[in-house]
Structure formats: C-alpha cells, structure tokens
Image (cartoon, rainbow, N blue to C red; front, side, top):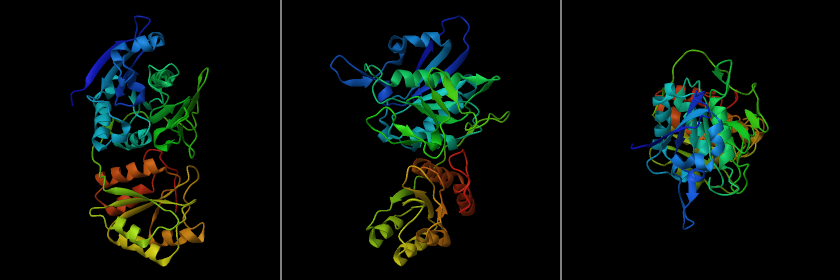
Length: 358
C-alpha cells in the first residue's frame, strides 16, 4: 500500500528520549473542518499547530496514514493485516505504537491484534475521539497526548504496558476486554469483566496487578491468517427453529458465537438443542457468550444451560463478543486440528478471558 508518512520532532531539547509510531487508519480523531464546514482528513504535518503541548514531550513521532482513511464501520480483515504488518515491520525502531481508529469497531481491531501479534513486548495503544481534533471541546487532544505518554512510559528500562490496549476518556483498558457502550458521551468504552490497566488524572495511576508482566527475550511474530466464515446469533424470546436452522445451513459456516441470556442460558426446548447438535455434527464450532456486558457464562448453573454443556457447546466464560468473534476467526485461520480449535477457544490466548472449566 502507498502509505503517507510524516515525521515530527517534538523535542524541546536536543536529546530525543523515546520514539512512537502513530498509525492513522481513519476515524473522527483525524478529521478536521475545512473552510466550508465539512469534515475532511486532518493533515498530520500540522498536528503541532493543533496540539502545541506535544513539543514538551521530547519524543520523536512518525505518523503512517492509510492511503485512504477508513470509517471504522468498513474495517475488514485486510485492514487488520495492514495494521499488524506495519507494527511488525517497524517493531525494532520504536518504543511504542499508537493506533488512531474509529470508535465503532475499535474493540474488534484491538482484540484481533492482540492475537495476531505474538510475543509483543511493547505498548500498542488504540485510541480515537468522539469529536474531531479541530472541535473546540474535542476529546482528541487528551486521548492522543495520554496515549503517547503511555506508549513511551517505562519502569526499570522496560515498557510499563507491554500489550495491546485501548485508551479513552482517562481510562486505559486491555484491548481484548473492551467494549463500546456509548455513542454520545465521552466515556465510550467499558471493561466490565477486567479492571482498568490505568487511570489518568494529575498523574497516570497504573494498576500493575492487572497489567501483563514484561517478559524478557523472544521476538515478535505475527500471523496474517484468518477465516471469517463465522457469525453471531443473538438469542431472543420467540426465535424459531426455521431461523436457527437457516443460519446453521449457511454454506461454509465454521463457527458461531451464540449470544445467550444471563450466565449462558438458552431455550431448553427439544428442537433448539437438536438444532445445535446437528450444527456441531457438521463441524460447526459453537461458542457460548453472554449478552450481558458484565458477568460470565457458567454452563450448567441453571437447568436452561445444562443441555448446552451436555451436547458440547463451548463456554466463553467472561469473554466479550468482540474478543470472541475475532478469536474464532483467528483460530479457524491458524489451526488445522478441530480438537485444537476447541481447546484454544476456551483457553486464554492474550488475557481475553479468565480460565474456564465449563
């Protein structure tokens, strides 16, 4: 791809303390109003004019922009490959990475990159904004400034946050634990089932117990393989056998994220269970994820989920739908053994879920 590259020296002093690569994919943060009042992609060569306090950070910034900024509603697998490849290719040259991304699918992208980038030992911080950077009350400036600070922060010479994260509205969340919950307020993201990794105020207060520890040695690898023959089926009162069977009969379907009620409950009618069994007999993996933002799937806790456990539906525990969908796509693309796919679906790969035994 023909990426646009801008190099900025924000240092107030001659000695550069650290370096960050910003990857601009698109989204509200990188937009600005033109003379007619229309939103157009922002020229990152002018970012110091919009955020003059960047000159006090004493870091070298390189911005790589996608040739055409994308609305995050249009993000697809190729975009994930592009993001991961840019980080992989530039991994040794920068202390940290900041990905500017639209909010609608940011949690999906952060989740997928947490699987794709194996052996990651540097910060990859996803962030964005609810208002354009040129807007008077924009949240873009704080989100970007703090993301850059986190991406370059170290303790004892090692990165403080060596994992894929999402920073928004003063909160740093594990990327594959995050979920967008607001479209009109600045606190757009939550992580109900895992504590925040940090909270920014006068200082950035890191929750070291929740952050993945830095591991010495090893090298970064990435995989570009994915299989998107998956779907999400959200249960609702009145769902019919005809609807369910038509979903399971989609040609090429390999995986289903089944969004159930509460702690993993579903209809206990015979036709429903039989439909699941027939799908699994065809080799379709069914992953049980709760519709609730918080809590976890506990198959067998109630009578209405005992049959799911009995027929072999896999429990997603406390995983989010976003992390479950991307995990399924990643494993279907990278594992040839059906047994290994099932084993890894219920096993944490990158801190996306707690250990589950059901």
